[in-house]
Length: 169
Image (cartoon, rainbow, N blue to C red):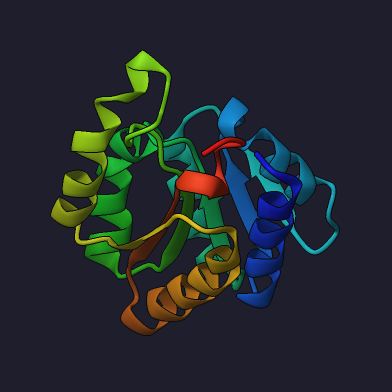
């Protein structure tokens, strides 16, 4: 991931007022996760499973924090149950920031299925989302996702792809 994309992600989280981050350590997301964990603006809680991350963020929200969940693309599938039972049923807002793998140009063969599963799952879970392909769009997208999550009391997602996660395009 380019340094500019890492900086834009951290800046967007700060501008959105995020002060609590749950994350599942992931190689695609390592630089952003490391930057967040080293930034005193955020309380960071690593988890062993994305579903636990959703629950931890729900608890943080109920405790007065503004949470975000930083997970890999596959994590949306793993988080479907708590996104339904906590966020959708209980109207708990959550911002998810996800490196969106599986699009055209992704050279790793096993990422392909995420191109056909990620967006339909988000739609089925009634998670409003945006797909960001340019580094300059990262921070505004995170701010908008946070604003909408809080206003609508639901989960939102920012899916990063293109130049935002790939070093070469």
